[in-house]
Image (tube, helix red, strand yellow):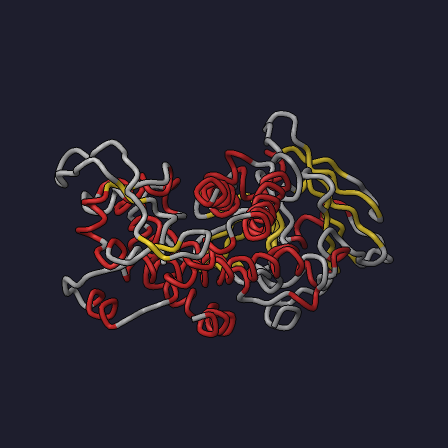
Length: 214
Length: 217
């Protein structure tokens, strides 16, 4: 029996995916709070500190500074007024679970950076989360991938608190830990540095399928 | 011990797992610590029970749980055959629970250690751990039903909590236990005098008299 159980380490991933896929229609019939009880390819919420930041629309500001000509502080309204982009993508967590068909709406980093005019030596964006001490970085090239954005809507509604309200990084080609939640500051820097999980041994270039774990 | 540790692990695990609870409770580092240390405490308590407890008694129990005879196999196929102190279903539950608990501990350890040493991160560890939870929930539901609700088995709970059961109940549901001579600590085999206890109400018309579940050959 134990041997069979230990073999589960080999087949658990595909089995879970298959089961979640099969159960998803049933799970969607359940109310929100209970839905997570059925394995259905849904979300898990990971945090690193003792409480999740609370979004106050009146006082929240997104600071964009660092190696830029014109540092800015955007209000929530100003953020929403930027050119809107939408996409549907899959979210992959490095721990092995994924959520498919997530609808995101937000602003492309190219449009955000156009406001502040990055200096020539700015090669990376450092995302600082309101959930201290979480932070992570992307190179400018990575941030300008076609499906990367700063998202403020998920599945048709403004980003919920547990998903990083009001704004989070979305870069589907990389694992979830690069998709920083509760972004309050974007600092343009000369080169990307180790973020929260990189300091614990995870890859900086967290390409899905091409970085640990396999 | 088992029940309280299991429930704390399940509760803290669900907070870590369900988005609704994760958001409500937040404090993930704290909940993770509770989850981890409860698991460690449980394992330590089990070790303590083995080191300091009634080892001959534990060995007897283990031998009984481990023995599946022809009657057990027939019982599992639905036939009404005599069973010993543990019926075949209980033996099976014990074996499966033990195996699953080991897998839980292993996957849990890998989850904890993998956060510190990247060589021990595997894509399926978390999914094994979560999958085990679902399997255990099924086992738990059955376990609780039989222990608390089902008329012919719920009397066994008294044996676990108070140490004695009604003798008529034991003769009827565990006849191969009742008929076996018991060994005294001194090593002589004899039939011990039944210890008086309150007769059971309801189905079994219990005469005063009972058997202690810790007696067995």
